[in-house]
Length: 226
Ligand code: ADE
Image (cartoon, rainbow, N blue to C red):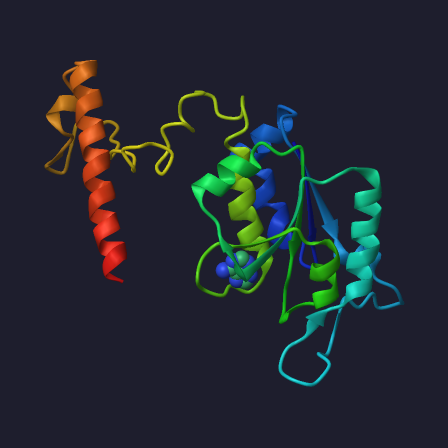
């Protein structure tokens, strides 16, 4: 899969997109993630990418020209399955959407910053607006990292144990992962559940399913109360 990300603050993307699982996916050539600095497409000596909003109001708006230049170049090079704009006004991101997007060949992400981006960029290029939750963060970069991570970890061969993505929380019928423990079996008087130490795989699987379901029901109840 090829993933392009356009941003005015690339430092917010560089480290998180090049560590851990995302780094491994790229090293293994399963995913290619390319970050594009909006400033490289800005005109003039100062390479301004933002300007005051028409009609007044607080904050700055990302200008259309650098986006158009960058997007037109990228779209002339390949066909994108989706052009995604990260915004709190988008549809809520879920595991189901991650699963669907993980079947794509080429994805393009646009990160807004400051007050937002000129609407003409959205109208002309964007095919899907995604929100990571009902709250506002400073820019789309952190949201893009969340969405890209959720997608890339699903690509075949990225995770060492091919089972693990399938048993992730939200991916199973049972709902959530069971709690996990490692050595020591007892630490400051806190004990690991005995069933995990006894080596009976059938019993362990049953215990895990039960714990996952219990956690799922508890979280669902808490969420429905809010
Ligand atoms: N940009 C700012 N807040 C956001 C959110 N909640 N989801 C996606 N992009 C955003």
